[in-house]
Amino acid sequence: MSSVPPFPVSPSLPRDFPVWQHVAAALRVAQPVLLLCVLSSHGSSPGRQGFKMSVTAEGMAGSIGGGIMEHKFVELARARLREGSQEVLIRPQIHRREAPEDRSGMICSGEQVLLLYPVAPAELSTVEAILCALHEPQARLLQIAPSGLRLQQAAPATPFYSYQSGPAWQYQERLGFRDHLTIIGGGHVALALSRVAALLDFEITVFDDRAGLNTHQHNPYAHHKPTVPYETLAQEVPEGPHQYVVIMTFGFRSDEVALRQLLQHRVAYLGLMGSAAKIKELRNSLLTSGYSEADLGHVRAPIGLPIHSRTPEEIAISVAAELIQVRNAPLATGAA
Image 1 (tube, rainbow, N blue to C red):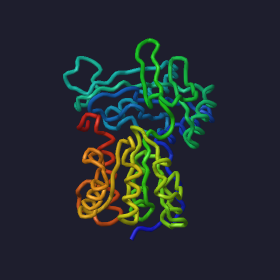
Image 2: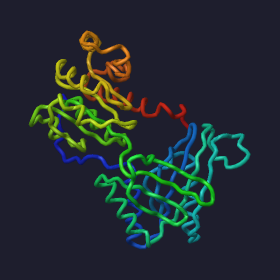
Image 3: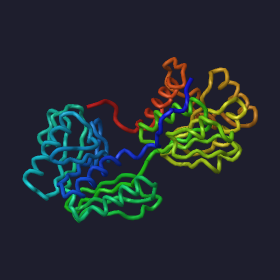
Image 4: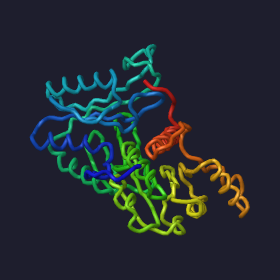
């Protein structure tokens, strides 16, 4: 049976935190460091927009996608460090053998634009502010442009990533987690799912209506663990295109209460854990009370990919796989 780990674990930090941590450490000892960033990506590419690495003469952190392309750019970055170059470099990469120029050496058919940015010693304070914003969620917007690194407040409607090419090029991203997973029910499967989702760059909230529940209050992977009555979930759970909601309470009645609260929510994913028999009975109850098939059409139930999962950990992996499937649906399929 799943249990709370006996060792201290902290909620995950956004994927880029180790990169900026490495950049800051290098700048503090006056060591030259280059930031590598995927400014844009299209089609099947090994690294997506926003992927980052930091490279020094002897170390590195993060990833821009791996493989031969990453190896090539790490070598290029280190050559530029040896030369002492302070020039910003932007390189398109086309992952097709027949491309007339800018071939990456990969054949997965996508395209990327990569940035090599020498971080100036004077930008240490900005890098430290980035680390603070990543560690303590704040609505901050990072800008990288020919004028340097800049941090400012992010307006609510600002896209998470954006890139403007050309001589006055500019890359922007909102700092922090883009995707938010809300788990309704703080039992053993929720604990296991939190553990898996922590590896997938989700900000994690787990709700339960039982005060003092061990697997809820001592869940070391969740960023937020409120205890609330399920009848108030409509006010507690945010909406939006990067919101993912999984219902897995301790019983049929509480599942139904939670689902009724969230059925009209506009989210990227709304799923319910349960057996086929339980899901059928719950659907019939909702249809009888006036909901339509269209109202229920966007609910994924039972949740998870069909891998015959039995243990909390297996269920968590099947659900996490479905979350990834939904999150990556707009992207081209295939791997480099």
